[in-house]
Length: 378
Ligand code: SF4
Image 1 (cartoon, protein in one colour):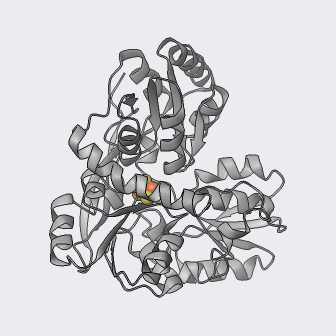
Image 2: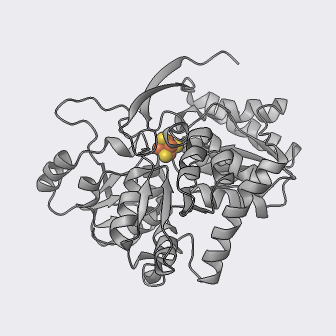
């Protein structure tokens, strides 16, 4: 394979509680393929998946061709937790994870006996990069009286230091429960999701000051202008978005919850504040509806992502075929670290199971009333 061009990306590199410092990371986005090349790659991947006893597990934000191929070959398209659980429960011996590195790591943590491959192991995440394990451990050491809760978008080493791992779909419930038990919380790494959860639950939370490069760019003032232009539209927002955006949202939820809301809401026009990769699945599930990407560039027009994750974009069909063909880019984790990282994930899954709280929506808003009960107008 020829080398893909490298781009540099700036992101918040926060320390605990101190204002963001700009970090610099890189990404390489595969060159687009022609229609004939895409068809050839998809066919080759299908053959290789069967040959390698492998299954393709993809995130909603990756290339639409990969999402379609995952579903066509018996794999899965989902959020990070669904991806990990699907991989754990599937009989295939090899998981090909199309997403970013923490998703591959989480798949390996939940499936230590399986081979986990990724199209590009360097596909990172500004939340993960912005929460280095040594700094995070020092912050935890400084607050030994607090329960440590981390978002799934973290490294295995950060998870291993936590009491709980949460996804955006279970965060409100878990923090409300810990708060009711009188526990004080250390939260990392996303400051916007942490602030939202803190507001909704009233919990005593100290927040790490990380942010998602994509969601941090949504602009409240420009969103208000768009809503004025389209008064019939409803706003769907991921809680990694800043509070001026969440304050205008009709539905706040995880990727899976937003897709289901897109399908079930009556309104024909929807403004979406999350990575634009999700629009592929929304258009499939809600044909005939009109989707608008929430505005990212303000007056200064300095958007870093334009609602497309630079690391999710590292996943391409050619990369999937290449790793299957050559058995490269395998996730390797220290087994002892993986065991420590698994404990807080299992704790979250047990919590969800005990509460009979789905970590994903069923697609029926009536049935999912409990799931959405605090995921409404902000
Ligand atoms: S969209 Fe944001 S949270 Fe998701 S992988 Fe990219 S930078 Fe990380």
